[in-house]
Image (tube, rainbow, N blue to C red; front, side, top):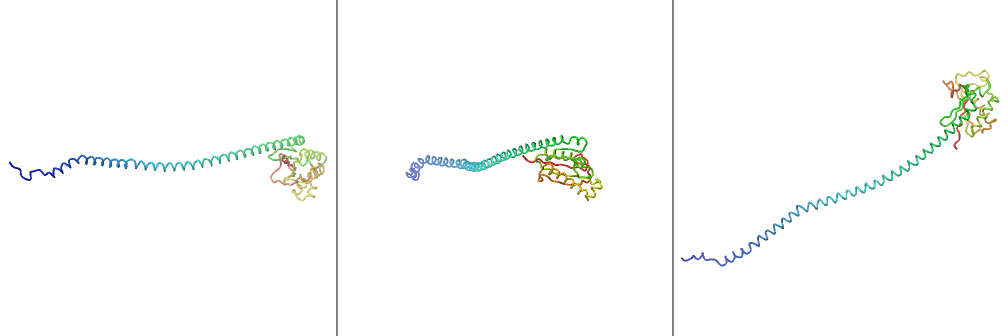
Length: 256
């Protein structure tokens, strides 16, 4: 049986088909490689790029922490310097307080010794309630009833009182002396004193001046160490447990 003409194989078609069959595996290979490349790029884009971004963020955060640490270190150094300065100032202040306390203790002891020294002189009058010596914060107060220092109804200082004043003045050393003559508004002076002094304040001032003059003239105490003051107390009947009128010698020992 004979073949139709179109059934005869076309040599060109057969050659093309053979060529395509030969190139088929290579195309699939190239396609596979392309897919691998795309996959690799996708992996890189999906994994390494966020990793790089995270690294940049961590680096920035590290820089911020480093700067913060630097600032904290500077603040710590400043604080340590302040603490050292305050400790030094505290030490200096404590030294001054200790020195001041030592001075105060020595001052207190000095005043107590001075008060004790006066006690031995005024003991006979103290037993009768007519004299009293006491050491206070910064001075010694020695209260003497008027009749211990003055003759009756006058401002005359008898010999025994002069001796007492000079003994007290000698024991006071170089301490300033403040003579405070004090009376009560209820005092009723003798007619002789009333005639000479118009008021109780004037009378008290005269008593203080008389004691001051005695200490200066007969006891050798310089006038610049003496101060005379006259007072009239309202509502008081005594001073340092000594009945008014009385004279109080206030002694403030000089600083050493």
